[in-house]
Amino acid sequence: MRPKQLATLLALAAVWGASFLFIKLAVQSTTAPGNFPPMTLVGIRIGVAALLLWGFLRLRGGHFPWAAWFPLAVLGLINAALPYFLFSWGEQHIESNLAAIYNATTPLFTVILALLLVREERLSALRSIGVVVGFLGVLYLFADSLSQIGRGTSTLHVYGELACVLAGFCYGLGNMWARRRLKGLQPLQLATGQLLFGLLWTLPVILVIEQPWRTLAPSVSAIAGLSMLTLLGTAIAQVLYFNLLTQVGATRTAQVTYLLPIFGLFWGWLAGETITPRVIVALAIVLFGVLIVNGGADRLLARKTRHAEPGPVAPRR
Image 1: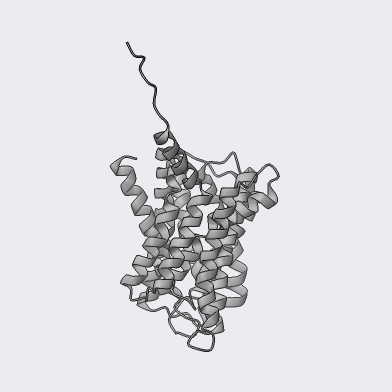
Image 2: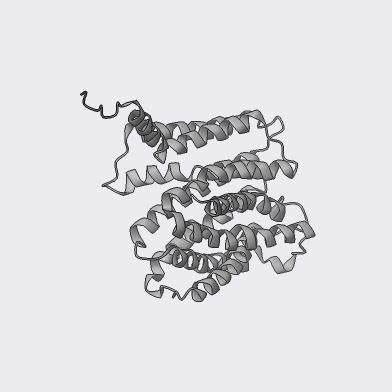
């Protein structure tokens, strides 16, 4: 990977990792005045980003794939509107660094769903170990919250963590759906389509349930969080992602999976969130599990095996 491509990878991980802090700034808590309701935040985020990506798609000479409207509509629900809402609702009750860690479970859920839904998929013993290790990290983190209920941790805190885990499941399901039903589309078409249809999914909840125009008076920090989330964490991040995907391919682009939660913890720490040893250990366990699932352990073992094998010996004369 060239220096420019590495810089793009780091920038992508940084802005995606910061998204969790931006969400936290925008929603804070259900009782605090001046914050955005969760689905309203999602609707604005998706709407603005969708328009920007639409313009970027047209600028590159692409077209919107209307023929694939149904699978894109499903993708907009399970890969945009629903997980975005779950993270936004969950972060009303938990720290942004926890949300970043639970987001890292997406590859684990993808592997499990591939095994259950795609018959030709097979789960090797090593990848099975990776799934178990990854979820042990989640349980290690989650068990601490359960043990603290009534001693400084509310039940809503636990529900917030569950919401973020469920969001990771939604992303995994979205990966499987896109792989099976949207094979012929370019990544930029996928992102634009899922955001446009994701916006449509948010509108009934915003208009019928939240009705933000009745009470909404967002604070400066909430507006700043929403603005940064929409421009950096959604629109610009998508552009960076597609450029990197085009230049280095899917395998190397997937390395952002390991960097994103690390940046998420870093930005949360800068904002004053407490990073406990348990959080760091849980993150390390989850990422190690993801590394195994993604085949990193296979490649490492293969490399060591190649180094251990004797090279060709020149004939003696």
